[in-house]
Image 1 (cartoon, rainbow, N blue to C red):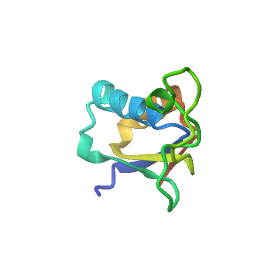
Image 2 (image 1 turned 60 degrees about the horizontal axis):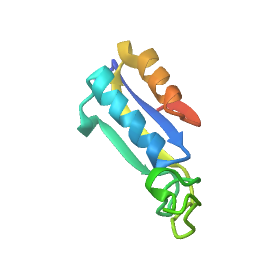
Image 3 (image 1 turned 30 degrees about the vertical axis):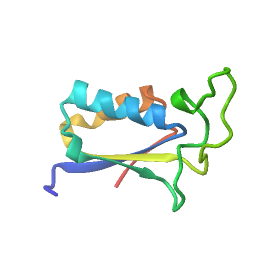
Amino acid sequence: MPDNTKTIVATFDTRESADAAIEHLVQQQGIDRPDIFVQAEGRENTAGTAPSGGDSAHDGGDRDDGLFQGEIEVSVDINDDQLSAVQRILGDAGALRVSMK
């Protein structure tokens, strides 16, 4: 990675929030999708820590068959000049934590 490139890591409690952050990074900052990585924060497969979007049951209640075993981690490689805008986008999308590697 070049010296002017940073990796920003954000955690989200729902996959819906993580997906929204990714879309905003692509659309507002022009970040290439191959520079954005999504994974479970821990070792277990997870859809986040709370139901949202498609995780909700059709009767309006929450489903109980989802894997809510941890947060979703989004990491993105950015240039130094994108740092503040990317941090704002991640925060606006609902990031629980944002850090830099």
